[in-house]
Image (cartoon, rainbow, N blue to C red; front, side, top):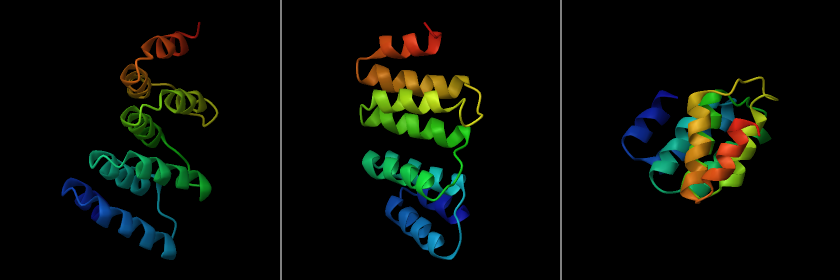
Length: 127
């Protein structure tokens, strides 16, 4: 994971993806590895790849934590995928994660970027 974080900080998203994929061949990467790689891709404006990496987490049964879900919602903001962001926010109770300010803000930002802020307010307020 340290190598992935170093790549992300150095804007070397391609290398971060390569390291993650290679690590999958020998062991199960953790949520932090997937999240750091996805965040590096997002910073390089490769949000589709970033979301694909987070989808891969589900495929290989790596449990999402609050950081990974917030990162995924933040990535949704870049792709104007407000519905996906709200869907991810809605999965938090099922994943036994309480809604927090960071997660709610990430979902709100995704909705706002897509000019759908009223949907986020409705969802967050529970009305």
